[in-house]
Image (tube, rainbow, N blue to C red; front, side, top):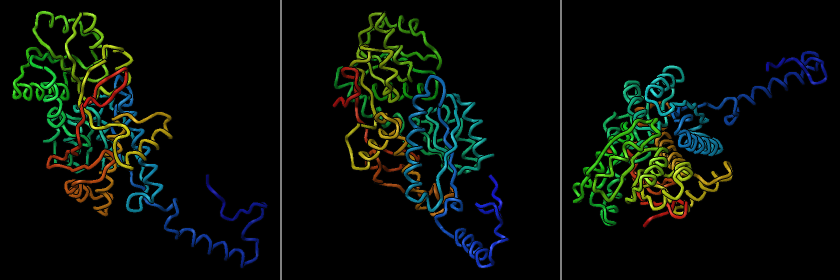
Length: 386
């Protein structure tokens, strides 16, 4: 709303008041404009976030968005980033690479952002990467395909790739009797790469993959694939997928499949338990977050998140909060919120940073290395398996 600078509350004009009053008014305007902490004059740093906010995988994107918003509120209450107030523009990629590509172009060309958090899906991050690399815009994906390691110097991740997590899962599976495994995977960059890494590591550990088949991202009927297992001798079923894994588990039970089941990190989703019911009991998977197990920094995050959203944080939220905190730390060290070359250099320097999820280091491929835990489902709850 525009304000008439000569209007008084009593309806008269400032120009009709005594001269000294008018001069006092001008002086007050001058000094109010010079206050360094005046929110009107504070610089604004806008970054982007590309996430699945609608569709089957929207839960993951919403959890990440909530964590980013919580971090934004905290950092702005502490004076911002090098004096600039943080704002975030969110784009919904629907877990579709072509939509992520359009969102990336918009954030770069229209919004002129220096940093983009996301996406959550590997295929989306890989679609964003060439655009970001050419524009020298930093991407911080929360996706685990090994291909992302080679996607470019400006492409980082708040989570290690499949090699890192499966280095923990495969020995755990072998110790618990896995010899012959069947793999049913979502047929995209994430699922294909997870299946390949699992196979390589299991073979190296003395086991064997005796069956593998992919399915479409939006598929809901898995009975034809599962039926093929009836004539295959296997003791373990590995399911790198998204929320549809709940349906796979349910349909596997319908066919009488009783093999030990393992999954990947997206398995930590209450929607999966709602669909799978007791068929999710005992499923094990690698993860990077154990609630209530960590520093005062983690405790603060868990309490603040629960206070704001009326429920405890999921793992995706914890990863996002940890990831954006590492990026902001690099931006502060760069001392220039918009110079992505400097921010990139500072990100690669990060070693043993005290993050929400413990000590964090960024490797030569831009991955934030975190401790891996093996988790399982017991009595309908996600708990530590070891």
